[in-house]
Length: 205
Picture 1 (cartoon, rainbow, N blue to C red):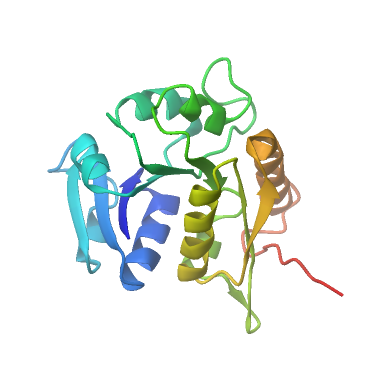
Picture 2: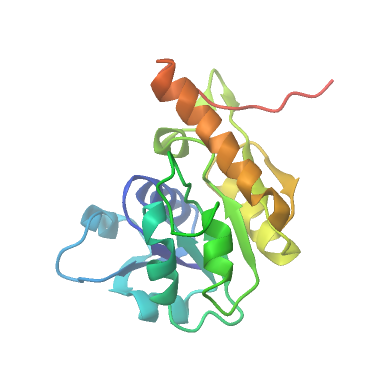
């Protein structure tokens, strides 16, 4: 799959590395080709840095993993997204997000052409994306959105990143729930001092 990564920090960098090693073609969409966060990602296989609009134009799928307050600005910078899949990995935390929105995925949908937008890779820390394995078991991932096409792609990419399963949480009406779930992890990891090396696994009986 041809994937554009918009936001090459911790989350974008971890997923770019996993997906490149899984055989996907990665385009890092950056504002400054000479100097950008995550430049070391170019050492990964199948990885190139391009302008944001060039990366989006070539890619089939776009991951947005920038700070949440930039959601509208970043989405508007993508150019024409007709026919593209967008995975939103952002979260509004402590009220810091795009003005007038309670979740970042709705902000994306309101400022782009495609309706194939899902929220995924937002519910755990980047360290768990680098290594989702705990005692010979892999963590699970979760996805929400109306687009079945986008959810199918996100589920495959979650498995390609090493997660055991990626569970369908529901449609666009579950975007806020996904962000609340992310804050639950943040609360445990940061505010309750359990540390970042914790994660979620769905058990069945």
